[in-house]
Image (cartoon, rainbow, N blue to C red; front, top):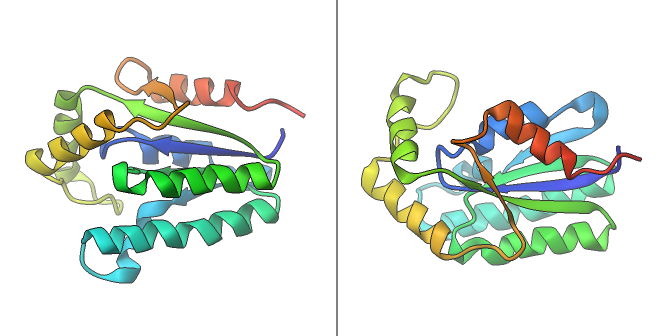
Length: 173
């Protein structure tokens, strides 16, 4: 399999993490780069903190690609972070790595229901955001599409189907 970068962009509860976890495979040098993991480095949940977190992910991406890893990068990438997403794509192009951006789509009502279910989660997944916050993020993402992102509906497709769709876009050697 050729080296690749897959970027999963979507609202909270759209399935980014679930898909990314299933795609990672250390034996095949496929790693998961969760942009949100960098948020805790910077303290409170502010726009500046998010910007630093997203910027911090770029050198990590560069390192992984230079060392032959394929990367599944996931993040919300709201309108103010689209430049970071663009820089990630540019890094892949610079290193001659195949890339594809997927826009995970799902009706708002389904996202709200999934978000509420997170109360039961105990394996490190964040607490529910609440309807108002999730609605704002959802609208921001849907009103600011990333050019050439391929839509991936996570309500109509199972996780297995989503993975198969992504894998079909990755050419074999």
